[in-house]
Image (cartoon, rainbow, N blue to C red; front, side, top):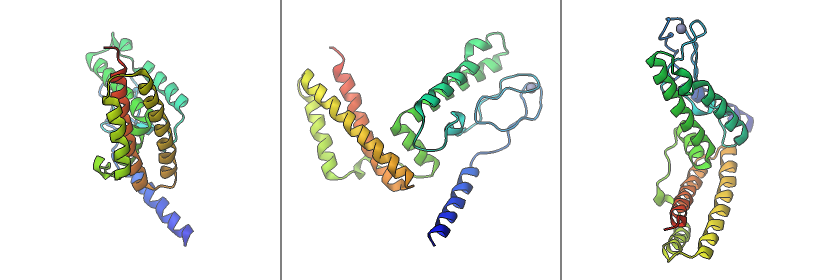
Length: 219
Ligand SMILES: [Zn+2]
């Protein structure tokens, strides 16, 4: 029974992952040769022209990562550097304006993909989006949690004290690590509703971290 359930879940997952947005790639804009569809930057094998980015690429495929919450940050960074090097606008100075434009588009898309996959919060939200799960509303968190956040906010609003800021910084870091572990486990059990709740909490801590950074700037 369990095996059958798991099989049907795997089939559904395969269908979902294969279905969206895999339209065949348009032919080369420069020489008209047929091209394979690709999530990453594609150079025409016949004339070497850089092609425009796919309309809605899968950021995990673009960055050569498994579609999973667990990522290898070093591998992600290596992929980021090599892609950025391949499409860097400086390399297209002597190429037609169209290609210069495509190189800028690729470059900003690669930045976006890197940032999205590197941060646990945006990576988790993107995974939910790929699975068709709406993100939680901030009000979905329980009262105890919201009180805890309110208390940290109040401390942050007090006159600046290095000791208090350091204490809050440590607290935020510990909470974020704890939540990251919990989100990892939730995604690994494929419990998307739990992942969604935990990510809503993570968002609160990300906001607190922004406030803390702003407060630390010497005035
Ligand atoms: Zn071509």
